[in-house]
Structures are given as C-alpha cells and as structure tokens.
Length: 138
Image (cartoon, rainbow, N blue to C red; front, top):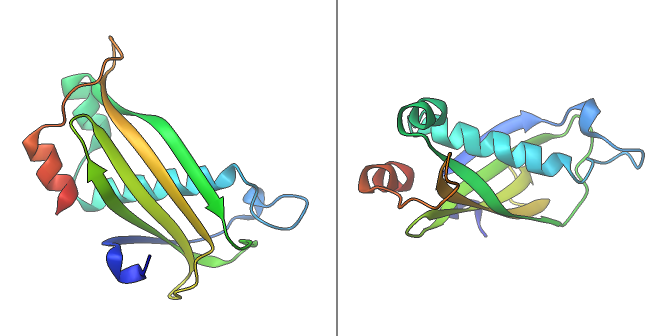
C-alpha cells in the first residue's frame, strides 16, 4: 500500500538485540515491533488499554499474526512502522502494518494482526462498542 493509506506511523531504530546471526532482524522480533507500533497507535488515539481492561475486564487477544518479509531489516536502521485499522467487525479488530525505511516508500515488511475483543474471565468474544469503534477509526 502507499504510505498515504496509513494514518499512523511509529518511528524507531532497530536494536542490536533484535539482530540474528545472519545480520538481519530476527523473524520473531517483527511481531514485537508491530505490537509496539499498535500500542503507540492506541496511545495517539488516547485509548488507555490497561485502564480500559481494569475497568471493564475486557481486553484484546491476538488471534492472527501474519508477517511477510520483503527485504531485510538491519541493525541500527531507522524505520517507520505504519499502522491502519483495516476492519472493525462485531468483536474483531484487524490492523494492517508495514515497515519502511524512515521517510521512504520502499516496503521492507508487511503484516496483519487480528485482535478479538474478549472478556478476560470467560475468554468469550464481546462486541466492540460504538465509542471504542469511533475512537479507533478517527
């Protein structure tokens, strides 16, 4: 996708601790970077997920995580992780993510993360309310 199709970017630098023997980012580390970018997306939308969970006993659980490795990401690279809400279903939330070199259109990695809005005790899906839906789509 074009960068303009994303309404949030989190900029960071790749840590040495995330590099493998091949000199590129270790495959599992990408999910940690995606998670951090989604957390910052929530923060930018003024959604305090820990407070929400404490007050409602409802949280988001990951049910799908997809990473497509297009080009290597190397140590100390400055990257932008782009985030957009692709879909909000009755109880699910789908994010599209991309990693780019900072300020560049080249795509290094793409991903999709699907959350389900879930009651913490019963582990059953709970509908996403209109207030939360509006907050996440703005």
